[in-house]
Structure formats: structure tokens, C-alpha cells
Length: 187
Image (cartoon, rainbow, N blue to C red; front, side):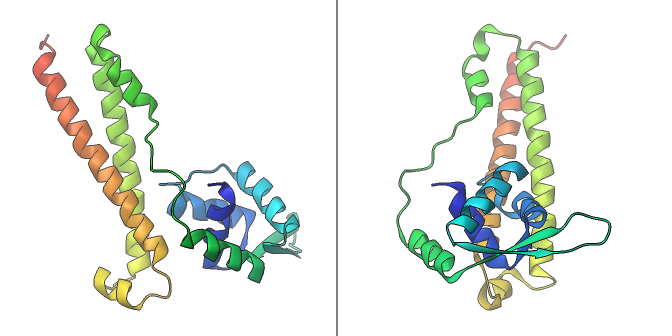
């Protein structure tokens, strides 16, 4: 899959500038499809050239002119066709930390412990951000009510996956730290 469909899906939220899209990626898509602002701007240009999004300019005082992007009908049609197809391949985890853990037996266990503690901190930070996003989406409603009545539930369902992923990261980190504590002599 390419960034193309992630951008088209993000634009289902409505018209957005490249900057706004970048912020939207940070809070709703980065847990499963990260992209830099530069990648997003390049992709928006390609999508506009292909007629999948439409761009309009908005003059601003004391700031550069802003470009706003919206999905075209062709973009919606292509996104719907993409969403109806099965994924081309199963999910694969590519994680540098796991390579380091695989190779840890010949190294310094304190370094490994520090790496795991760092990962745990990242996971906690992401979970906090995801929970703030969740509270904003629910806006006082129960999860059941939101899922039954919201116009769009896709962003919430993917947020649930991000929350579950980071909760599992934390559980794994706690387990690894427990194992390391038993194996590292207290000095």
C-alpha cells in the first residue's frame, strides 16, 4: 500500500491544508502509517495532478498563501475500491529494538534495561496522546453510544488498535524488565 490511500482516508475528515493534514496524521494515523510533512506535501501534489484531490488557494495576511485540499469524486471512488480489497500482505513487525534484544546475550544487560525503559516511556507517551484523542472523539459520550451514532467510526476503530498496541508494548516491557531484574545481579 502507498501513502496515497492514507492521505485520501485522512481527507474523509474534510478539507485540510498540508499543515492540518500533517497534524491529523500525528494524532490519528501515525500509530499505523507514519509520514513526514515533506512526504505528505509531495503526495498531495501527486494526488492533485491525478485528479484525486482538488486544491484551492487561500490568501492569508502576513503569511504565505495556504493551499486547502479536498477529495474529488474520483478520489472517493478509488478510496472505496481500495477499502473493499483484502490487504496485499499480512502485517509484519520490523522493529530495531527487537533485533537488539535478540542479540543482547553477549552485551551489557544494563544497556538492554535502559532501552526497554526508553521504549516503555515512548509507549506511555503515545498512550496518553491516544487517550486524549479518544476523549476528544467521544466528547462525553460512551464508547457504545459513539460507535452507534457517530458519522465516521473508522478513525476511532484505528485509534482502538493503536491503544491496544501500546498497551501490549507496555505489558511486554514490564515482562522483559522483570526477567532482566531476576538475571542482573544487584550491585
